[in-house]
Amino acid sequence: MDIDVRGPRFGAAVTTVVLALVLITGSAWLLAWQLLVFALGAAGGPARSPYGWLFRTAVRPRIGPPTELEAPGPPRFAQAVGLVFAAVGLLGLTAGPQWLGLGATGAALAAAFLNAAFNYCLGCELYLLVRRVATRAG
Image 1 (cartoon, rainbow, N blue to C red):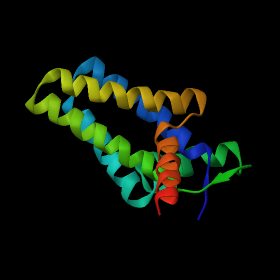
Image 2: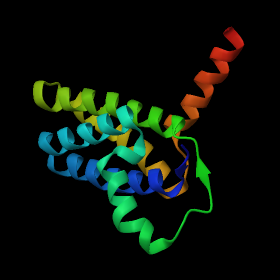
Image 3: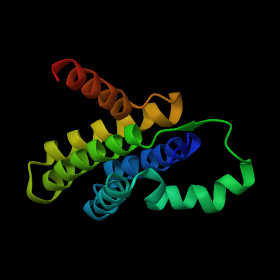
């Protein structure tokens, strides 16, 4: 089932704020929350994540029905990529080295910001690239 294209962008905006707060505060707990959000989005798709739920229940009713839909595969893959970066970030913040945690969190923040501000999803583009390579190889 296709999803409202505005949902993942909203989720990216919330993620941008959360990850910026992680970098400002160094909070492993906050990064653990974002890791959980990414895990739920990767497992069930972005519409099943807490930010997807917030978009569906609080934002979408106020902005009206979607004018454009997209397949959930690329955003779901992007959530999985975010999950990996958040996991590495959490490992770095809790077990060290600190630079690893900050670097991985910063990379995830950069990707989320690109999606939120410019509607450019790095994880989605990576998904499409992987699919093209797999199609040519197979």
